[in-house]
Amino acid sequence: MRMTDKDITSAIVVREEERGFAAAAHLLGAIPLWGLVFLAALWIYFKERSREVVFHVQQAMMFQGAILLAFLVWLAVEFVSLPIEVLSPGLAELISRANLFLLVSCYAIYAAVCLTGTAFIMIGRPFLYPIVGRRVLEGNLTKSRTEA
Image: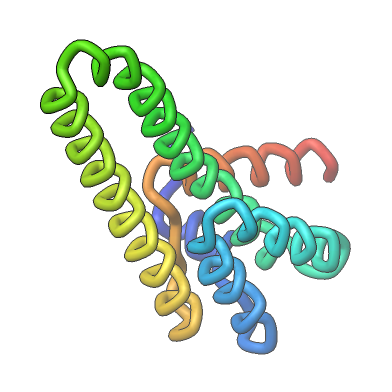
C-alpha cells in the first residue's frame, strides 16, 4: 500500500514543544558512531513519551547505518590495497586516495542530509531520509495498527 503525502505528514509532524528534541536527533545523527550512543539515549527517554520524536530518532539511526556501511567498505578497500602496495606502490597510493575521496564525499552528503533534516524539523516541516525514511515510517504505522 502506497502512502500519500497526507499520511506521511500526519504521522511525522512533531509538536512545537518537541521539535528541539527531534531536530537534535538529526543533528546528533551526523556524528558517526558516537551519534548512535546519543540517539539511543534519546530513544530510551522518548520511547513512552512521543512516537514522533522516536520516529525521527529511529530514522536517524537507520540512516547512520548507511554511513557506517560506507566506512566498512572504505576499510575493506584499504585492507585489499595492502598487498597491492607491495607490487605497485603508485597504484596502491592512487587507490587509497580515490577511496578516501569517496569516503569524504559520502560523509559530506550524509552530513548535509542530516543538517537538512534538522532545519526542516525546526521550521515545522515533515522530513524523511532518503531510502530509510519511508521504511521506518511504514514499519511504525504497521506496528501501531497491530497494537490498536
